[in-house]
Amino acid sequence: MPIVIRIGGSVVASPTNPELLNQYANLLKELRKKGCKTITVVGGGSLAREFIKIGEQLGVDEKAQDWLAIHVSRLYALLFILMLGKNATKSVPTLVNEAVRALKEGKIVVMGGLKPGMTTDSVAAQIALETNAHLLVKATDQNGIYNKDPRKHKNAIKLDEITFQDLGQVLRQDYHKAGIHQVLDPVAAKMLQKSRIKTVVVNGYNPRNIQYAIEGKKIGTTIMA
Image 1 (tube, rainbow, N blue to C red):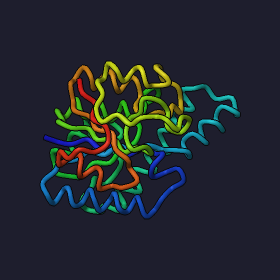
Image 2 (cartoon, rainbow, N blue to C red):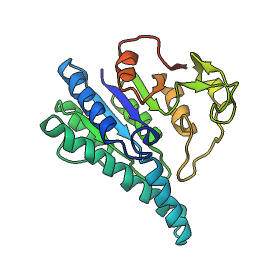
Image 3 (cartoon, rainbow, N blue to C red):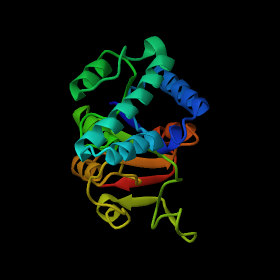
Image 4 (cartoon, helix red, strand yellow):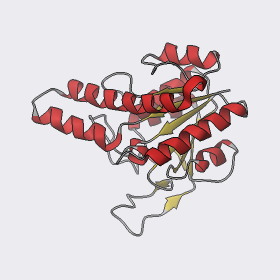
């Protein structure tokens, strides 16, 4: 069964980190050689939020702001595709069925956002659902999920495990907004809870953490249904 990898824009795109992007590309190639079918969804990070802010200042509505962020995330997905070469799809999938078809063809799939009102977390969750993925790993700028924001609270405690039901108590925002930035989008959390897909949140600054999660090693935070 396929594995969905969600690379946060806060990791590779805030600011853009070419070395880390390359490490992730190499990891995806290695996973393919080992027989792992992967779909990776990458976010647009600070650049996407910058365009959202510009759009807001120019008076465009939130739907249009979302489109700006979507195109930025697709640009980062394109960078991956260029690095992966023949191992990946020729272009960035913009529809779920395109991604599913490419996966069946044995290609490494890398994509960004799909449509306004849907974060890249939600894209990853939908892809996991459509492909019957047994695992979703999210690479973030934290070591996992904490009982409160570790950037604001020095006494924050990392949780090794948490249920989707309890996750709502630590999420700062429970609705969609263009540029939402938290450990997991609330809409995606609800989708994953309903589909009972194992989800692991890891520190994305070390791409090997993705591999460790796939291997079942204790890393980051595991979210259980």
